[in-house]
Amino acid sequence: MSANTALAISLGLLGAIATWLFLGPLGGMLAIWAAFIAWGTFFHCGGKESGLSSAILGNVAGAVIAGITLWVATQTGIGAKLGLPIWAGICVGIGVAAMVLLANIPAFAAIPAQVYGFASVVALTLLGNGAGKLAAISMENPVVVIILSMIVGAIFGFASEKVAGMLAESGTEEKAKA
Image (cartoon, rainbow, N blue to C red; front, side):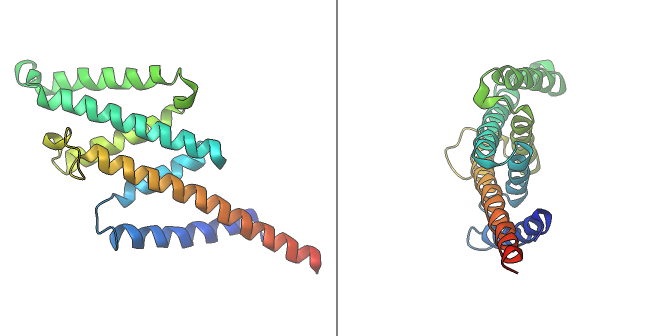
């Protein structure tokens, strides 16, 4: 079986399992869309063990930086004095600069992975009105939800690559026997 066909089967099967898991037993505690972003991040970072660590470290770093950025932008009161659009712009500019500078450390070199984590936290925070929960150590904190969702997603990415490899190998072995 071709590598692409094997990957299609693996992604389809594991995508179905992940969706069931996130919408069923996990009961909406985690964000399936963030898991799929991290799953893609895994492949974007080159796959294998190095892609897994790059995806997770980058996604987590971006999520943490977003959480700090959003907290400073919304909870310090400076936005009320300067105007929220100006203050939020300054905070995001500093947060983005921090992500790029963090990429000087090899473990965090995947800037797109950081951006995906940052954007996911911003999305969940703004769409879920979660700015007031950014300091909570709970599943109400958008940073916690995104980090956990993205770690699970990256692991699913790793698993899908392994399953696809096994499917492709078994197809090759059966052709060799014939």
